[in-house]
Image 1 (cartoon, rainbow, N blue to C red):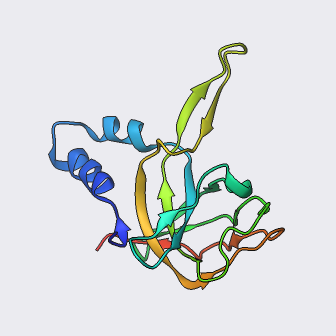
Image 2: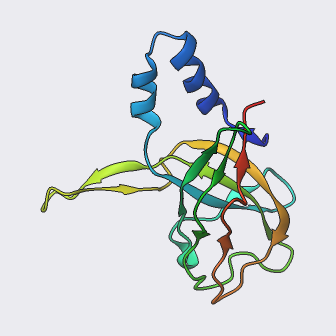
Length: 154
């Protein structure tokens, strides 16, 4: 998998500026909470995301802030994952990449309330390598500090 923004996000950007969809239409599709997912390198293929719901793994909410003078965005919050109930990466397996995912709204049929979730059905917007491979063991909480995720269009 190529690092950077995915084809889906690039397509939406082009649609907003040059396509048949208006910028408002595109923004309505992609203005939702964003989540970070963790990918492990298994050596034989492209990195794959950890399985949501296994060993306590869930994607973590991320908020971005535009750094206007430098034309890039950075995460403005600490991206904190739930505590690992079992090893997420151990032995020869390491967490090597992150993915930025969209989320979607779900409605509770009984209460009628809506909430945002992130799961296997969400679009992958960006794919980025970690500066160092990580092993996440039972009981550990993995966190990305503010300003540790930086993205820009080139």
